[in-house]
Length: 148
Image (cartoon, rainbow, N blue to C red; front, side):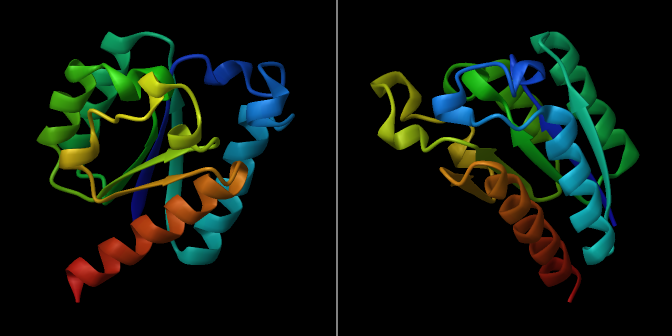
């Protein structure tokens, strides 16, 4: 099973950026935990991070071509306004799980809406790094259910 983890804008700054919201864990540490859990669940997890919206869309297009089994996405601020990324995600036929380290519904008003909500399998937020791990478990479960 192939799972693609998409990290959005400013996520390369995890560990340095707003520790109150995001803790001190780095992106490399998050990816290492995803890799370890992926092995346990029988999924190969590939991670991709960019601060360029166009590159994110191109990577999503590539995921479609590659036939990824599932996609996890933490698009950061793009979640709330990027219709370009939303339209790229809509191309995918595999389960897409949106996740966030912080609880976006307990933050500023503009963060309460996800433009991806109507086209994704589900959303997990507010559990720090565990949001990623829960998201991976949910994605693997959704793929297995679809194949059963």
